[in-house]
Image (tube, chains in turn blue, green):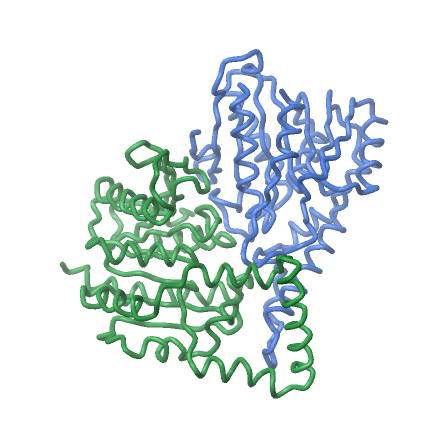
Length: 265
Length: 288
């Protein structure tokens, strides 16, 4: 694999290219991986790398990258916005097209990474196939979950502490180790995949670790827009996104990763 | 406005398996320190560190004129696993030494400080013991040993509150039941993480003494999350009372921080302590 900085020199992004390890009929296809953010990014890093490696093993070009203000990419953590991240998807897609020499690009997104791919599709950043892995459907629900997890973690930290001031939390929104500036919060709150305007995704796969009604609704919504949609449930790799582990538990999702690889390949 | 630093991705090591990011001052003309800082993997986390702490720290260090290198050990993050029979401990020491060799060659640096968090602290300890290029080390939530004051504080908190006494018995019965059911709890996971393979205290003291005697500067940071082993401000002084520090050892206790410094305020506080300490100690290398 080849890690490097790409994009605008003044706001470079970090990416890792996994070339095909065998030449197959799939070697004219590239797969862009769109990662989650904040604490879910930390938790999923190994799983995303595993996915990239397995796709590469099957002969596909694969490219994973860090959004602006996350990971190794430039930008402070409080400079993030949904608008900037959608631009990053376009930049990363173009980079993958240059690296692979192909315009046949699929995309896999995990959690908010999946939601961002849908937002990008609305802005006509086109992919031949999109795989949405445990996507965040309603941004407001995601923010509520972050607030709940953060509040619980604060109680754990404050246990036994007297007169702990809450002011840093109140003045500047932060959730589980990451700042969420107002612009980013607003952008996330505006996400509602069930009201996505007409998007042209030749093929979509909804890959979920837990059966939630909203995923069924999303599947129907995408199909109603004339897209070919498949819903795949893999309970063997539970996301456990409603849990925060302060000692940095990693996501192990071998089964769902294999399902995604098999579907793409 | 220029960012004040520049970064480059590096693939290094004998088999070009290891991946890292060098962060340095914006231009070659800017004043640089003569020491480099190595930011080691924290547990299973890749080279950006807990909540991107290594990235933020590296960029601040660059603005102060310091070159830093955050990288992944074999098989972690973006680095490829080694195909040898070495243990994790042995391989980690070699990888860190490869990182130093890489910076020696590329950036003409000859002395290094290491920053290790959790298992990274243990790796920093192992390398500091054996490598003369190490000028200093920072250990975050590294090894700790209970003292009698630790036990008093721990059980006083429980004994002073009737509800806590009740909860203590409930938890004890629950733990006993779970032991029989072999059910892992978050508490058990935490015990495993913080206990790891805790060496004998005498051995640790002797090794730290050896580092001090070789003029290696040492900084120890402990958080509230280490409460199973460390729970008061001066526990370091008590647990290592036999260590003759010669003014080369400093310690801090963050009683409002969890293991990963989740709160922004606490993370900023820890970064400030680290940066102040580094600036104080690396100055002795500037005129050599």
